[in-house]
Length: 137
Image (cartoon, rainbow, N blue to C red; front, side, top):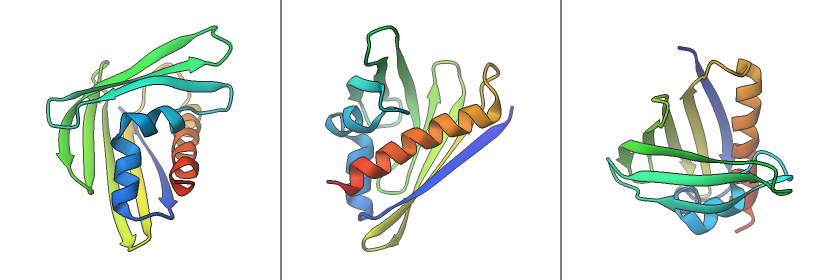
């Protein structure tokens, strides 16, 4: 199975980045790949064995799906790993560059339906949305 990595650098301290990544009230504001989508609800039980879910929906109401999984590793302010419903694995590393800068590296198992570049672009778009939301806090 191929792995894909996306990355961004956020101009905020790691504590603020972690909060924005893990708190449902923030997740609903950044978890979309394009302006015509939104995330109307999210839940997060941030612990090993805990479950998370975020509903991603087209703003015109034509389609929606739940992005969900179970945490396999949680190291506060450093790393999160989880397994999605289809058993693909994801690892998210939070790297403190300095007091006001954090790098996020997200590596995930590719799925077999969409082209690798399309998957990379989609996940990168969501990560870019996260960066924009978090830097505006």
